[in-house]
Length: 557
Image 1: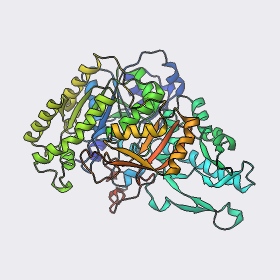
Image 2: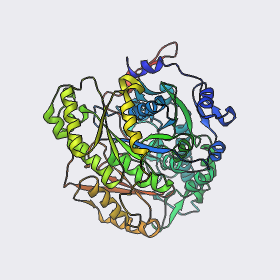
Image 3: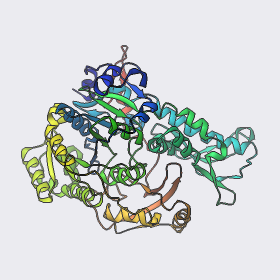
Image 4: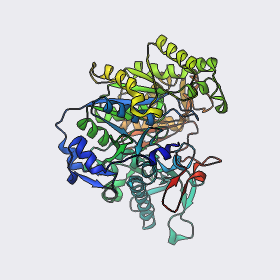
């Protein structure tokens, strides 16, 4: 059966009763969205402050491939397995974006018998959080143009407006647009563009905010552009935008509760991409789960060079989170792809390619253990085409590396297939104090922070940028010197070239653009030709999605 067919056969339980049964949370603290989804009130979240924290486990992966690795599937499978073994565990996931759902990557609710449900709702509009984020973002964009139209008392330079518009869809035609056409009545004629919602600073702010007050404060700090002197920043608070934006986000800030196929609780909240943003679910969701459960399993997007690094250097640094261990997900198929095998041939045994592609896993593992300072379990997400010889080779190479390696069959068997993985995780986290090391010191310059990530984690020889970008970073160091950096880079490679597989070394990371995310509290460095508005592939997934007269959806994956 397909993922959606498995999900549609799930025996879901009403979320209100399930949350009460698992965690003793009364219905008065929940805002239900139908029978199987609910938001948890911030007042209840605040009431948990004095409770001890559980153990935080991060699930990340090797560099992504078209074959897929299965981070969300592993996160769900591991959480279900811990619960199956009598532990109290919650999974914290990101909300899927409609862009990948209708594009090439598909949804993000897990797969096989390790999924969160209701799968169709989660992958489509869910509880409306992304809509609220997009509207709040675009309200600020409208206020900017409206202010200029009505006299521009703030002296905003229309050529230096930094705030684009957003939509939760892959639409390359919107990357660069002209607004204000049609004469003076329709505003000031200028260049503009769209990003995808997950790249919005409002998304990043929602994911990092710790309260409504913090949310509103961060929204007010957004730099929308500069005055005509080219130096003085203009903030969202100068337009008195933060109050209305926060009002639009009044429900979006509350964590969403759903369940797995095995009726365990998962929190799905926030959804920034890790290749163009910081790639983690909300701080609120993670901290809430840590108060409710003994083990919290969360994911960070794409490979450990992107999502895991930002989880450590941005999220953990800002929120004072202390992870206990990392699960590094790999597949035989993906490693063969990194070893040079074409996608169509990945189901054929190929030990030479597997051995060559292992260098990708090795670098990620070393980054996690040496630069993040965290113990790591390698999870081989099992596929039916994997041969015993290939699995033995991979486990042998992991043993030489000193890595714990577990073959896990949670996709096919659910929690029963992930018990060995869960036991390995328990063996680690129950016997070490939580904590990690950051990749760079916060007192380094922005340039040095970017270079440190590139050389330590990506295997690069250095970084390059235009004199204009260097000057901009130097200027920001004066006022934003302690900000972490968020590198927007292709997820397909350690380099900026998605075609360079394995573990390339000695390359140069070119920084093509830098953006100040003052409300979120970090500097975005765009590497190479990374796009913050993706495009659809030649054959988008949307062409295969359908709904029948009974309301049954097909084609989602």
